Amino acid sequence: MVPRVTLLDAHVLDDHISKIFIGQTLKVFKYLPSWILNNCELEINVILQFLMTYYSVTKSKATFGQQMLGIRFKPDQLTDTKLVLFQLFTIGAEYIQSKVESPSNNFINNISNLQLIVDVLKAGSFLNFLLFLQQGKYPTLTQRFLSLSQESTRKRNIEYTYMTRELLWHGFSELLLFTLPLINYQSLKHKISRVMHFAPRKEDFKERQPLMFPVSVCSICQERPVLPHHLKCSHVFCYYCISSKRMVDEKFECPECHHFEPNVIPVILINKVNISS
Image 1 (cartoon, rainbow, N blue to C red):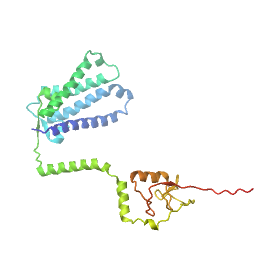
Image 2: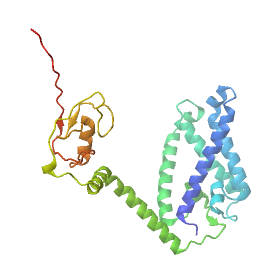
Image 3: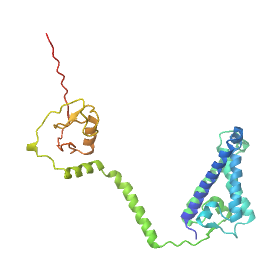
């Protein structure tokens, strides 16, 4: 019996291959008059999907996605009548649904109760998917209606050691994706820096008012200080720089002299003006 994940992967591959093939073909038609794509795009898609189905299911008894994963329809079940019905239910139904959902008026929109039929088919597809998850046999409603079972064309043996290694790796990667955003890297970096650099003793430290010069730079961003602040040492910081560091780590200290001060103090700029009487 073919695993459920393989059947679903084949269905997804068929959709991707169809979109790529149709997209590349429509790029060729862009050099033709614009009215061709505007009026006949859905019809061109039907023709291309019919060609893909003919050269895959009709010739090889398997879609291109199934061939890539080593599965196929059972040849004794896929008769000529079922081939025609398979193309009618897959390609024709998708064409009618696209016409119904199209904003432009067309002959299909004039058919009464057609929208109701489309909604019923969508509900049937959803119920069929629930049955597929339980039984693992028919991934699409068309395959269930035509009783088209699938079989594997090659044996694939997976050792338990490989499966265990994959499960452990995926579990470890999910754990990293969940825990890494919770780690405060800046705080950890500051703690390591404090361990590597010995903080000066309080009795040796002398409070001083930093001086602002034309060449003064922020000790964090190394740019001209904007709203200069200090930590009672001789170094100056931008208000945004020191505030953002303190938001990450409450014990952030001066990166130059490694002095810690809980309060961030603004630098007072004094302009001396001589007034002559």
